[in-house]
Length: 339
Length: 180
Image (cartoon, rainbow over all chains, first blue to last red; front, side):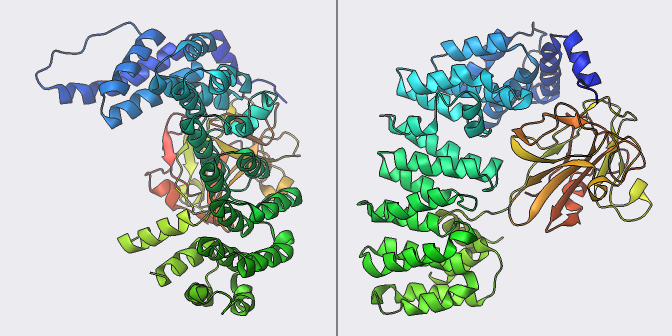
């Protein structure tokens, strides 16, 4: 077995290869800019530097079009992969503009994911946890979006965690935490990762913001969570906040098959005893999801318990009778029927 | 999808995690400009059915075989095969391989790794997963990449990008749009 690749050895011999990558990115832009410029003076060659790239990023984020903003952020990310880390991390530590910090954070996060070096995230995590400006704390959290951030926080000793960040006094920080976890669960792991799902539940339970907690519980997949987490969700069905009870019922609908029987009993009890229509609606959804085609009998047994909800039961019965095999299709059909 | 169906799908998403498959971007797996696609829907583009991409640069146990998906994903590793450049029967012919498991039965696989210190399950973006090799059913060292739903290989992910035999598969080039 060879510990190093030829590609890797080549890079070690050429430490400033990032400058070549950056020049290539700039060259790619040339024809577009030239044709769009019309009578503008011709482009002039400039020295390629990280400072120059940062200045351009700052200007683009203030006045550039959405496409140009996306371009400068992507270019920074690609250049960050191969440039020395020190200059980039120093910029993360001193940046005072939230938009620029978020872009720098995204570049550092991308570099950490590419090079599998989670320690690169430490300056970003420090700013997320302790910057005095809430806008900058939120920007630092948003910088972590789209990577395996839960795993990376663990590799940094869980000195900073989402359970800690969700208790931030600033709503924009809490919102960034929720968006990171929902995105990571759906787009990095496609709902299949136990650690991310359980972190989302733990973060929701640590939150003093019921809206943030409800969004986490209702939008993160529970397909891999363990028994202990299922018990925590079940306990949350007794919370005072109806939105949280509904979100917990929605979450319980997606727990692993081994937990289905006891969870179904909890949701049936919830439907029979809770007076809130939104909670009852979520309980029915959870029952339908746990049983799919086999949920018909349970749903029928609840008819008349809350006469105002019987139309909801009818919609689920009709949707389940279609025999659709995938949950998102069943859910879509039920919404269509309830129109 | 018409506007009404999109509206219902959006309403369903708001109603909880639903796991709808999405399109990803796949780049070449080898950061060498001499890496080319040499098999697509048919082996060598004229042989028996294949429905996947085979990519090589004529090397074995030398160049990194990188994660092809643009963005961070979880690559689950299935190893245990001794290093080989010209084939073995290990892991049902897949050799050392990785799977990114998406929604609704979709997955993306990269096969035939020559394992090294980089090999193992990980969440990363374009990282080194091992070396280009020929473990499993391989007549020579190459990267095999496929996009499947419920274990059936699909071709749209590379045909949609015009990728065919002779397409350059350098790691900076987009060569597919797999569903996950």
